[in-house]
Amino acid sequence: MSAIYEVNAEGIIVSPGKFQGEPAWVPHFWGYALDGFGEDNPNGSVTVYVENPDIEQWPQLQGIAGVTMHVDDNGFVHHGVF
Image (cartoon, rainbow, N blue to C red):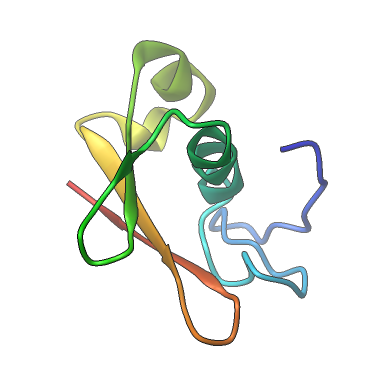
């Protein structure tokens, strides 16, 4: 995703919008999901697996295998990791 977001010192998006309150890397994985690189889950969420280039860009993803995301009824994206 090419949008620019305002991020605080903890790496959390503070710009208003659907990613507000999420880590700065969530839009990256959401873009993967929209491009068809995610796995749809029965509960309506989508899973995208973390790969080495992702960890190089966001070292805090070290030890995380994947990101699961869903959109709530208000259009906000939320994530979980495993």
